[in-house]
Length: 133
Image (cartoon, rainbow, N blue to C red):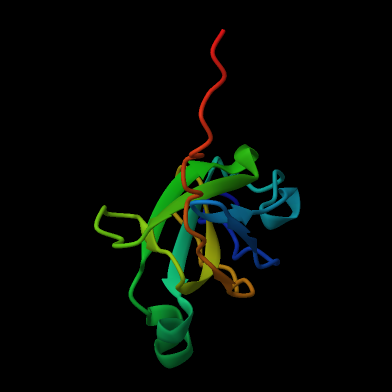
């Protein structure tokens, strides 16, 4: 590969896990190569509803798209009952995640999709009375 180009496609799919109030997308250093020139400094995280991905593959409509520091190794994606806020997932819906490395030239190709995971609702506030001091 010639130096100075777009990052390579990540070799590993990210991990996707249920997280209270949404989903957690995780990756490790093997997803991007520090030896690339120029090096990857960010990761583009794309979440797609599982049924949309099964039907349309990589061209499926994006449910959430985030760009974070590559060294973060993970990002939490919020969910709600309505999904009315841009970038918010719908609770109870299954999603897959893909990663693309980003360097000063641009974004490379997305990884293969993760295993699916279902966005989890936020826990209700506790109704226990607080102790008086």
